[in-house]
Image (cartoon, rainbow, N blue to C red):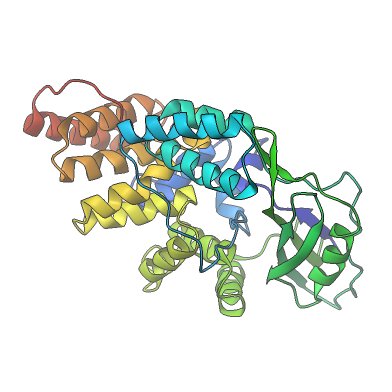
Length: 373
């Protein structure tokens, strides 16, 4: 058995290569967006991106009763943020804290920077104890290698106790049972907002494998087969659908199921940045500009985009704004997209971005600069 590895962002773990490649300029939008995210973290990442067996960064599964998030304009976002801060300075109930968290996210999605900063500084996700986990023992395979993703979503009360878990994905060896028992053996540090504790969800995910050796890489055909098998076995797993969508974008962009897979992934994980960007881009191509802008807003203002601005996210927002005749916003977003493109990026893509900006300028004229909300 090779064991299990905690799933972190695959793109955040890529490192260590003296020579790096770049995506082909004729790659599809999803491929280029993904490659840019990886490049912004490490220039040597592209070969690792192509080899990755699992892109499904775990995402909390939404309850059917979850209310849709608010959509605020800039003025509303500022007022909502002020009201939330006042509430949290007092003695809010747990329900008020949960509403405050949703309101802060809506204000951040609207581009209100103080709300985004407040979230980063004052919101703490639940954390498990430092006790090491014991990985389950499994029988060694007589030949070959087997991969399995294990994802469990656990309910953590405000006092830090685990109140049960839902199994989102499991391997053939039923690894989840062992992990759930170990997770429940020690109290958690509960989620807090401005120091106020509240009940929340904790996501635990590992990738396990047995057989082979640590250098083993799944051949492409097997990798794609495993990605399709996961969504077949676990149709409600956001991570499984995200992984399949990203693998298709990289390796089989012409696959007939690609559009449907993107939409299914977005339905399960609308705040997953790559999925939201690709869904929004497809909405733009269909002329659904308002829906596209609504979809891209979380990705446009999340912490990752603020730290490492992805030009493809900005380009998508610009196209949605332009379709809605919001010239100032479209120009601001496309100008920033052009400015953020690395000089090493394929020249056909850099020229395409500049040409699109020229098209917007020709239609809109010299609009004043505004933020690309």
